[in-house]
Each structure stands twice: as C-alpha cells, then as structure tokens.
Length: 125
Image (cartoon, rainbow, N blue to C red; front, side):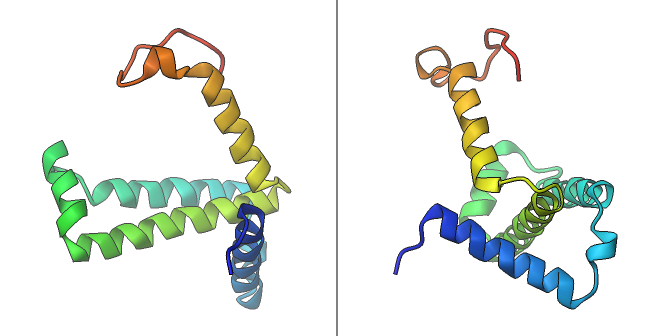
C-alpha cells in the first residue's frame, strides 16, 4: 500500500501529536520553545560534521554507520519539532512546503542557477 504525501503528513502529525499529548507536554510546546528546539537540534546536526572537510563529510555519510544513526536521530528531532510547530501554528505543512518550493522555482530558475552556487539575481524571499 502506497501513501500519498497527504497521508504521510497526516500519519506523522498524528504520531507526533499523540506522543506529545500522552506525556502532557503540550503546555511546553509553545511557538517560542519549538522554534528554539529546532535551532538547538539543527546545531546538534551541524556538530556531527564540525571540524571535518567537505570531502570527509561526504565520505562519512556514505561509510560510517554510527554517524548515519546519529544523522537519522538529529534529522528526526528537527522534523518532529517542525511538525509540532506547524501544528501549534495551525499551518498546513504540505501546502506551505509546496508554496515555498513554487516560490523557489521562480527565485532560482534552472536555466540561470543550474550548477552554480551564486550569487543569484536578487528577488524577494
């Protein structure tokens, strides 16, 4: 059975919300706390690669099983907090991702940016 994107988001939102509610943590999941938690978890993700070269980081992701487990955990933490914040702010996660990707399609046209790091023509975010 394949899930549509919408079903996937719905299932993830239910699992995250249920996890939080069963622990009576909703009171602590304010927009401020969730935003701070996302930043903290993102810093923990960056810490996994601190002091390594670009080449070393690529190699590590491909070949280091311990790093991959830590990487999975940090990415999951970030996404769980993002889902929680989107729920708390009553945002449709699927819609806002599609909306942002659409804006980025216009901001970064393939014919202009393909294979380039920048700078890009200025446009609004």
